[in-house]
Length: 195
Image (cartoon, rainbow, N blue to C red; front, side, top):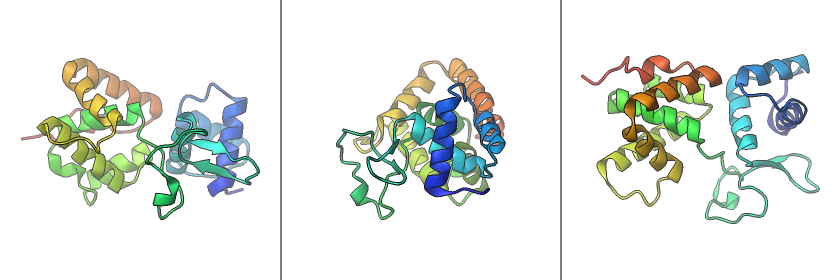
């Protein structure tokens, strides 16, 4: 059976509840396939990150899951501001660290959402190309010392994390990619290296 939307959310979270050891997308996909669910890695990643960040929750009395702030929180990220009626999950620490490592190893231009490298990064991280492009520019703003009042703390932290110990950051970013099955190690190593 092919699932999408709230039905897929329910199936993912049911697997997470039963099988807490689901540490990789591949393992989670395997569990979902064992349940007869057909879906994509990108769809699972988006919902998995939301679930793990506490941003996907069951609404009282509602049929489906909501993506947004954890219950009981109020911030400027109000879902009523979004034309979709929900806010996408925030960038995780791991996604931000990997993106920072790729940023520092490559030309600035590969972060443009029209570029195939950006689209590949987006697909692997379970994000949109526009989101990768935005965070890429945010990283550039942090590096340049520009105003970062609208840049998420996770991106700022990822930049400083990388700059503190470049060799360790590269090693960790590659390990995260291996564990999450994000095939981005060549970009972390700078295959599109700055010349």
